[in-house]
Image (cartoon, rainbow, N blue to C red; front, side, top):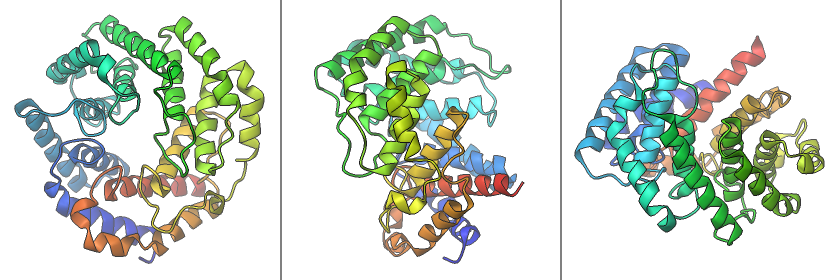
Length: 354
């Protein structure tokens, strides 16, 4: 691998050829993740092969979930697939009304949330936070052409139910707020804070959110992550919530992240994945930059941008990929997620050159 363009071209060729071999329709490991990537790639470079691939996958996934039993959780189930379809509509990549396109899926999800929330775990990938992520996403403003016919009251009631349940689980020790040993994009504490910030932005269950923030304060103020990527994640989530009692601690973490070198993140040689590697760091950096006005981003710095490309080039992952391609196509652990990170780095490079 000689440079960013060669890496990206090689990965996209592999994904275009091998995505039909993916055996699940889901977002994190399956075809929905690849579908979203192809639409994003088409939007970036206007090459029709990406739009054709995205439309083909979307039709396949949509048909599959209406003809076959599919689990409901976020990472590889209906909640994640519905979130993905809604994302395509919100970004204007496809036309359609979300209430109509997702009617049957929503009915299944509504039933699970209403009847089985007490049986579900806390986390985002297979638990309550994943369902809340989808519900809150459906409450975000819609493009003018899509309309919004389904009563928002229903989604709000589901969000309230989920927030109540998450708060109860957090207060009874059923969430893992301890910092992971290594970078983990879906650390329970940071996901919880990001979702609270989104609910607050939408004005949902504000009195409960005040109590949740109060109850979390001792945990948050006692946490200074040792892993720099985990610290970045926690900083971003805390900044978005903007709690007065947290301001000093937030600024303390920000000070350690200003003009930081990528080498400080100590990513392992093979760490390219979305969940715990370079691709996840690129995603997190972009999310924080888009949420916080005065955060310039890690990869906006030219030296970090170049270092990220060098990390890609020199990674032993490519040898592993050549022997395990069928297991390496997904968004969370595979080339779809790495493609997303390369696409974002391309955008960063373009904005830096302007």
